Length: 264
Image (cartoon, rainbow, N blue to C red; front, side, top):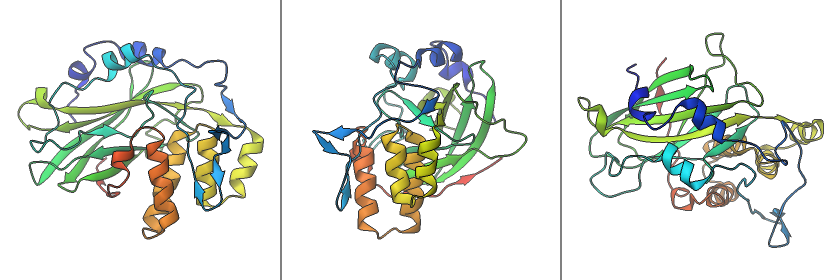
């Protein structure tokens, strides 16, 4: 797969990008936080769940624009619909407890029947951990990329930051027109108490537990899997809308979850 490193990382190095994603005093490698409130009310209420977006990871707005700004107009979409979007918190940083997490992005309706996208995961030393090509048909919606758990792909290490990005090829001949969506993922470990809660929880409860503890990637992937298994469940649909709205992605919440084909 053709590398786009020079195009995408022309502003700064991967090491500089990932060093920005620092932790404050409340971000421990082992996570176990009290249940947050919203407007004085618990996050969980009878019949519904009210999610709160992660707030403890910080990436300054200036650095966010410098590192994550996609060149203006590169949407591969002349209809003026939403742009290619990574499903990440406003800080661009999503925490995970998995050695091989799942990443989500939104693809708008395109001007052509089939597109090619590329997914890359890069560590703090600018090593490519995983790369794959995605075949995408003109079916707009929320899509996911899984990291294969095998000996050829090293697991994410706890306490480390990783840069991930999706590149959509708008023009097969001209790579300067590529559209980019990206974020940072940081692996953390959960406390024994939280792990016991998860063992006894159903998928909906697990989503709440992950969200309460700022574990964005698993909150998203657990709820997405539950919705795929139960597409007509109104409570899961409401949970999904609440979760995405908590990170200012409410406009995407009503879009379908679309399966795509990953290539090695």
